[in-house]
Length: 334
Image (cartoon, rainbow, N blue to C red; front, side):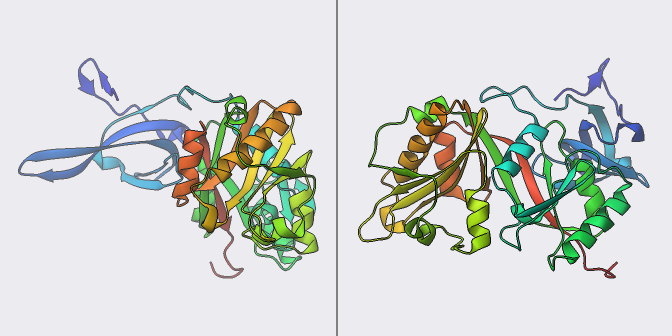
């Protein structure tokens, strides 16, 4: 990265740049051999008392003493994408929400409060995309009240790493004692190459999950609420690859929503792994989504799921942004 202007390093940042994507260089070590420097790129989320807070794409926060800066500048909000469909964060956030719908929801300005009696964080968290219409502290208090009335902990689902994501809000939540519990990636890809995968074992596609599908699903959620969440969406499909006996060898789920096909619950019995069954499930669901007019794919994967990440890499998925679930502090704990 280039910081020089006329051959000199310059810090071209002020507190007015909070909320912008920046690149900084700081002194990280001084010794007999000279100085060592560290570069950091991310969103400048606060600048208080000569301390900068920068949030990286992954959501990691880096604290920097302003006195150690030797260079810094504002950089473009997002690097140009080299592959995959074009998409904005708000579009993907809302598509993903429609693909995993709560049992109950309510609007707070442009925020969406979602509840499903505790079945998954995604269906039981506020999606703060846009303006809540009230000051932040009031909005967060209303969020906590809403979930408390339902006997649920208050969660907020936020994102980092793309244009329009919520690095500043993440910092504000942490400053108020909200704790990040889970992070994952939302990845996107062109749909046609997935559907062009080789033919594999027969894959049964159905509109509802049967008992065998639910038995394989890792959440083991056969309750009425779980079924309502799993089956809700614009156009939902369930895939099953038969195994020996009643238990499926592999399953998957896809929600078709306009140009988007959202994949989830792609699971393979450990006995049948490394036989291409996950790819077969993805291919079958992609072909059905293509038939319904979709052209782009999205999915969510946790950072520690190495096997799934490798599969999705091979299929052409690229990370669009990271998303996080923050849990509110207990009332009176601050």
